[in-house]
Image (cartoon, rainbow, N blue to C red; front, side, top):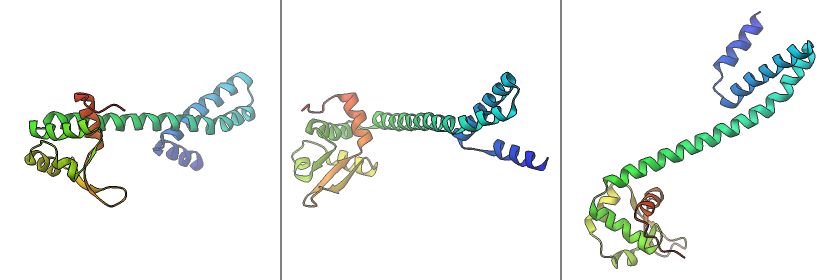
Length: 161
């Protein structure tokens, strides 16, 4: 009796989504097979055989749903941030969009007709920061990719190739 109680405690304390769903469905399959065949051995094998397949499928579906949920939250946060930007900040971001990417060299940035207040404000908001090119030869300004994507969606100014 203690073994069954320990097993039940473990099943109900489980926080692995795939395992929880697989346990439930495999149990239902085992019960269904038992009710149809009246053979507990076949029912047990049916449950044992279906459990890993159901767990893999349930885990995959759950992970995909979690990734979509995370992307949606990140997009909502970026949209919320975009809606709070000042005109000067949007003008700086627009210069990135017009250039066609989320990175500009210092020379490119100096050639833009943008407010230094807008640049500093984006840096303080941690939307814009300084970086280096891949070859390590030039310093750049890098714009947050999520903000770039949302602004591109809202303003639609990125150069097409």
